[in-house]
Amino acid sequence: MDQKERNESLERVIENYSNMLYRICFVILKNEQDAQDVLQETFLAYMTKRPHFHSEEHKKAWLIRVSQNKCKEFLRFHKKHAAIPLEEVEESIGISNGLDIEDREKLNLIWNLNLKLKSVVILYYVEGYSVKETAVILNISEVAVKKRLQRAREILSELGREYDGGIVCEQ
Amino acid sequence: MNNNIDKELFSNIEISSKAKKEIYENCLKGRHAGDIRFRYAGLLTAMIGALAIGSTGIGTYAYYQSVQTRMESMPQAEVEEYRQDLIHDTAVVIDDSYSRKLTDEESLRVAELERKYNSEGNYPEENVKRVATFEEWDGESVCYVEEDNKLYFPEEMTDEDLLTFIDYSTKKDYVMEQEAEKEADDTPSPYVAVENVSEADLVRAGYDALGKLFGRDVAKGWNTRVEAFKPSAVDPSEGTGHDMYFVYYDQVGGSSYSTDYVVVYNMNDLSLIGVAVRGKEHWAGLKSYTDADAAAKVKEDLPKVCAEIERLYGYKNYDLERDEVYYDYTDPGENDARQARYVFRFGDTDVDVMWDLGSEKLSSVEFFPAEGDFYWYLELE
Image 1 (cartoon, rainbow over the protein chains, first blue to last red):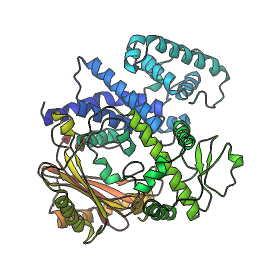
Image 2: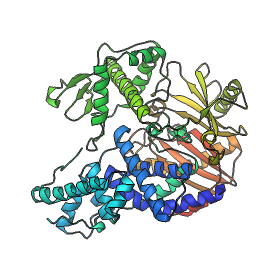
Image 3: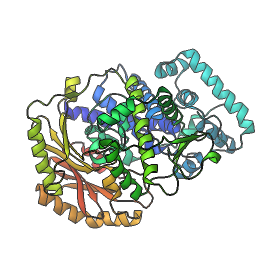
Image 4: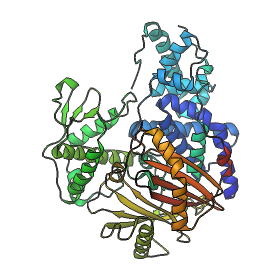
């Protein structure tokens, strides 16, 4: 592949996957700039490592895994911008347009889940991966995925009844 | 509440076209994200992103021997304190690591004191105080409050306060660097020996490039160092497009806050890739504009920028141009804009410059082969 083809490939990958990756990273990092930084690092890794993919799904999973790892690195080592309260995000990007009160509360609870639970919830529920696929992407066991999903459901269920706008489960 | 989760909850979250465009262009140039600490988290590729942004903290400067000794002689308990600070610093509910931003005056003073810290061993008498709760802070000292993992600054900072802050930051960065190195991939280093030219020639050529952009004798007598960055040595399929020589001009005793200069050359043909003045010290000395005034001035200054590029480098009559207010060193800054970024396409060359709005001078210029038409034509949001 020559340089021109590589650039075109990069364009396509950004076009096809940036919204999906951004959605995941933004919900995890809770800040637009930090999510963009992670995406840049992810696509830079794609461009420089040029891994061989067996399929488009393989490529998608690889990008998610890299971005998840970058999010973890970011949270561990990097100077962060301010986490944005959900209320502000709602206003700026209309995240909850058309949602009823219960869904808005649910969104708020997910927003404030810790990283481990949130990663699993997003991949399983939002991106539609199976337990097995989620386990492969996050490089954890299927049992761990199931446990985290269970824990997330418990939080959504138990705390939802008592939730009054505070932080639920921050790390 | 039922516990079903509908994927439509997140369907409105989308990345902007502008951000996609920036990511694409930065990837083409091998640029890392704005946070330079990404360099410590994984694979190293081209690092020209540091050119416009400058150092933001750790690792950019080799530790001076006396400082290195000070870092290495930290008691293990103290190292563990910083390590714990770093761990707790990851909580995403923390708005910032400090109770407030340093003022411009304090930033300039920090740069001055850091030079003495590095070169003269001018250290604070005591470490940062640590208290469990905000109520325990006396309000008059630099103090780490454990309950919210923030470093609190008094309203007015004495030199001793600033030194205490410098010492804390240096130690914390040192511990972070040690931790990051433990975590780093076993990736072969892309840094190699200078090959097809002598370091002295690169330094001399760099002085000419700096003289042309910033005036004669700039950085004269400063420390110089040359880095040969060759990602193709790690992965030949990478191509040689990002193989570069970086020539740094650091103030004696310089630190992460200090103004420095950098000149970048293509490793293969020694063509000039970039020239820049950087550093928080430089930034803190720039005139600040409101967002509205800065936006207007960016448009107003375009002819002046073009004239400078033509005068200095001979490029004229651009094919494409775009510009923006550029924020740096602060979180995108409400009404604290100081620089503009202009990107021009002249035939087969893209010229990417930073412009100091107050002084109406270029602070960096970069040259790249023109690639990736796709995003030039996207409407910015």
